[in-house]
Image (cartoon, rainbow, N blue to C red):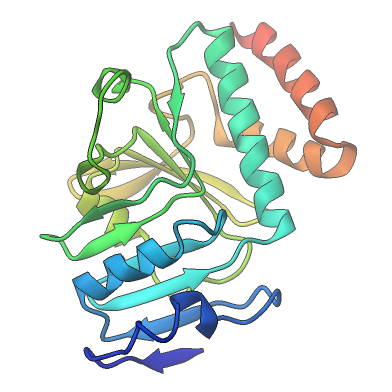
Length: 224
């Protein structure tokens, strides 16, 4: 669904959420959205966990959460935590934090994000939401087709590593010369291969998250 929105859009009578489909898993794409209006939408959705807003040069995509989507996001968090525990790596996660730049006219909210090499940038810091440092790894769970291409957004924001999972295939990407190039192993977690992690994501779907996490921990002991 695509809707044109004028600059004088009246938000004092309606909240952004009022224009979305109730519980259908649908999304909406708004055009001609100014930066100021984008920030108003962010405020409107601040109290709606799981809803994701993506902004790129005047286009705003709003996507509601789905059970399958949240299931995989939770599993990614568990697997990354287990990996960092096994290899004694310091980790900070910020889930769907909003990363945005008015100068670049872009904003995005990953499903999961992790600070590993750059944990010192956030631990113990009082950081402005508008100037929050980008993570080392961002995760996108794309179970449904999205309207906006997020690769240019992440590359312009200079997120070093991007993981994309579509429900069947998991791909790791490394940012190099302003473009993402697919790699077999994670840059931040070099012993972790996309092919291996995919097996455990599918195992979690089949046998449950607890069983998959136990098997993943066994695998980590083998590769240490």
